Length: 164
Image 1 (cartoon, rainbow, N blue to C red):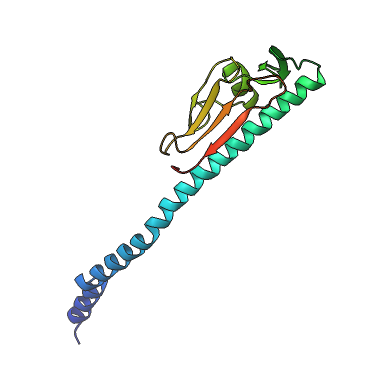
Image 2 (image 1 turned 135 degrees about the vertical axis):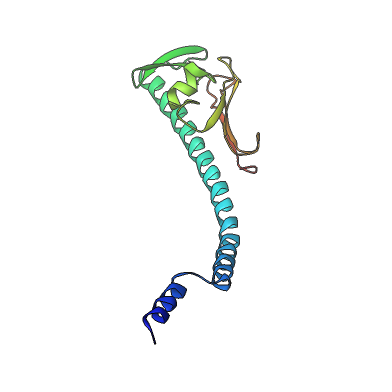
């Protein structure tokens, strides 16, 4: 064996053959085909979890505001204002109103800080505040908060995750 033959053999060993490349690409494609549906399912599960967390947050915020109203003796059958976390929260029938000054302030949520779309309903009794999780099918991935219609009643808070 001459030194030229040894050198030629080394050059051959450095690259990949076409068959090796095809096999490698095929394996990567099979792995991607198996993994991709799992990632899609994870996105759906994440949106459902976020919607459920928002539901829990709305329930907690409304109950905390109501407890604060009871503690400060401001539970009325009409409008009132309480202070939560140094923020004024407007109430109707003892619970936060369905707007920015009410439940949105009590929940401390914003379109800018969360990946949601907020639709405030207003300060009137029975108005509806909607938080839709972006990426889901509206109105099938959202939480709604409806302020109580009468004094002594509680807000209606509902969760929809069929389109997340």
